[in-house]
Amino acid sequence: MANFCKKCGAPLNPTSKFCTKCGAQIVDSQPQQAPVQPQRPIQQPMPQQPYQQQYQSPYQSPYQAPAKSQDNNPLIIGLLVLVVLLLGGGVGYYMYTNAADNGQANYSKIEKQAPGSSGSAEKEQPAPAGANLDDLVREKDSIDTAIGELANRINSHLSNHSSFRGYDGLKNDAKAIIDRANNAKDRLNGMNAADNAKKEALMNLFSLEIDRAQGLYKGIVDNQNGGDYSLGFQQGTKASYSFDAANSSFNANYK
Image (tube, rainbow, N blue to C red; front, side, top):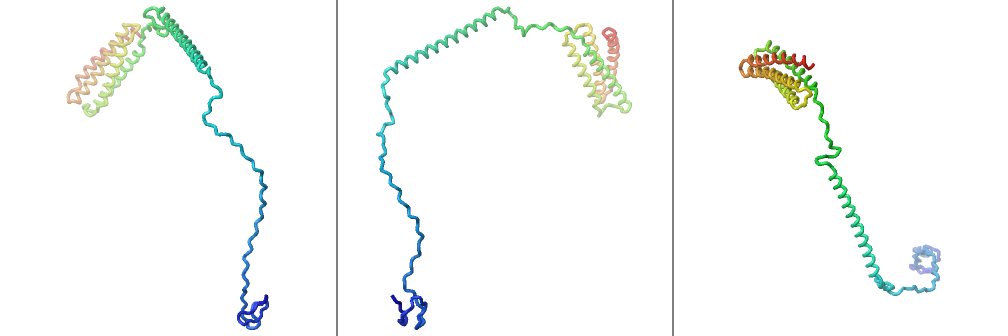
C-alpha cells in the first residue's frame, strides 16, 4: 500500500525520509516490531516411565510381640540364679577359710616367739665400747689457747685505755668462751667413757677453764659499771694456776 504525505497528501516513496513535494519529514506510521528475544532451546519432554506402584508394607506397631511364647524362661532364669548363688557362696567360703588359716598361721608364729623378744630387725646392739675422749681433749686444749689469747688482748687494751667502758668486744669474747667450755663439759658428762678416771680429770679441767673465763668476764663488767677490774682478774689468775697444775698432771697420765 502506498504512503501519502500527511501534510500535503502527495504520494510518498516508501524509502524516502522527506516528502518530495512539500519537504515534510516523513514519520514512520508502521508499528515498531518488538525486539526479537533469543530463542531458548526446546526441551524435549522426558519419556515417561511406566507408572510403578511402590509397595508399602502394612503398618507395624513399634512393639513387636515375640514370635513364640517362652514358656520355659522362668525355669532358665531360676537355674541361672541358683548357679550364681552357688558360685558366690563357694568363693565366699574359700576366702573366709583362707583368711582364717592365715590368721591361725600368724597367731601360731606369734605364740612361738619368746616373751619380750622382738624381730631380728630389733636385736639388741652390743653396748659400744667406752669413748676414748680424744675429741674433748682437743677441745680442752683449744679452749685453753682461746683464754690465753683473750688475756693478751685484755692486757693490750689496758696499755692504751684506762677502762673497758664503751668496749664490749672483749666482754662478748669472754662470754663466748664460758659458753663453749660449759657445752664441752655437758657433752663429756653424757658420754660413756672407757676410762672413768680420765673422764673425771677432764671434767675438772673444763670447770677450771670456766672459772678462768668468768674471772676475765667479771673484771671487764665490773669496770664498765664503774668499779675495779682487779677482783675479777685475780679470780681468773687463781683459776689459771690451778688449771696449769691439773693440766700438766693430765698430760702426764693420759697423753
